[in-house]
Image (cartoon, rainbow over all chains, first blue to last red; front, top):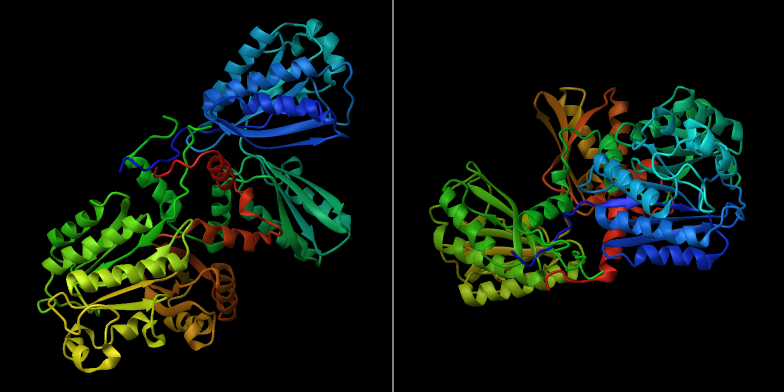
Length: 314
Length: 314
């Protein structure tokens, strides 16, 4: 059976954000720095000129992903000058945020460890201050990205040396032109929008208030009511689909919409989603009892293959 | 990127049924004959003493699966004597039915070709009459397995030589103690049961009549109303989930049940299911528009990996 190969390795996803969305040659240099590391694969990247910001999604083994993130941070620090940077999106540094997300075989602890290692290395070798956030946060007030980024680069420039509250987790008490970088670990995020059979934004806003965590709704759900393409839209982020899966939230939207005399017209998924999140939706809708992922042919197959051989990344 | 491996090979599933469910040493000999072929993997097997029948599920590359099926048929023909066989399940031969099912990368045409090749080889080399069925059938009246098996081994013994309607597609016009074997190609089958919040079997029977193809319901759906564990159960087989996916049938059961004043209590999946069938359920429930399997992280990943390397089964 030695001819069968399988992905059994721990896999990590990394989605760094860089403060450059206009000079595409700079974005490409950063993407190349990531791509050149053996053991990682860039899945996609996109740039927004208004935000003046780019996002890269890549995956790989823990060591390779950490190495690639380091090379990206180094490249960005040479090519982006925060004193020159303007854009609508808040930011602290050339490489602004670096989240690690556990995929197959990996745990949140793996990602926290990666964030710590990378943070130390960026602080030591590149002299860039690093703040750890979300699951990797060292203080409760640094869990939320928005809070770490308060005041942005311009304010942090002076406060980093004087305000102990702003002391970085790694690196110097002083900002260079590359600013500071926020590194952390988080669950996969699902960006999901539901369009309603109405153009009344108030209906979407009302539903958003019912379902989102901040106003007493479902934990780990962020939601806004918007008007998109002439339809009221409930725009959502699910930040922890293990704790709050999609199905009950959709069920709740359907119920609330019916009370307003409208229905779901269609929905859309932005970006990528883990297969298991969709399987959970199917399982909830079907009211499956005693269902195991072992009953999914592809899972079963990869397990049986894995028992016979483990040649991945030999 | 040459270190990344991926499953890109055509994969076929084969689920042969053997007329032995009591002498486990015989079943094991058959399973071993399959397992010993390089390039196939046995996912599971089970035996039923009342039916006096065993089912083996294995997967592999087309050539390997065909070779393993041949070895299984040969082994069964040596160890099982139909003149001695008794059981509640109808059968024609020691190896009774051999369906090939296309998995990732493979098509129904691949499976039809496999059925023909194997049929010819079994007829020529083992002198066992072979009937092709379902997608591999050479005549419309041989599509249905039940029809090919009419009268069973005992009747076929005499009719095979005298009745032109019973002439096999391959092999001699004469049955040995191994009987005849039915070989074919079919879509993956999903066995799915819905339990209702009632012990009234009539409700399940009524719903079964509404949804099943044979009484004018959904194509490719077989359904029966039963009483299981004190609950009315709608027991279903989906024989072509590309044409009739699960979601609309479940929706219909829910509606019909509500009209009877009952609801779905829970459901259960028997055996294995393709991941894509579950993704289709999730997509239907979420009313996803413009959804692509490229948005499933694991798919995207395997595609990106595949573009870089194709070392599977080198």
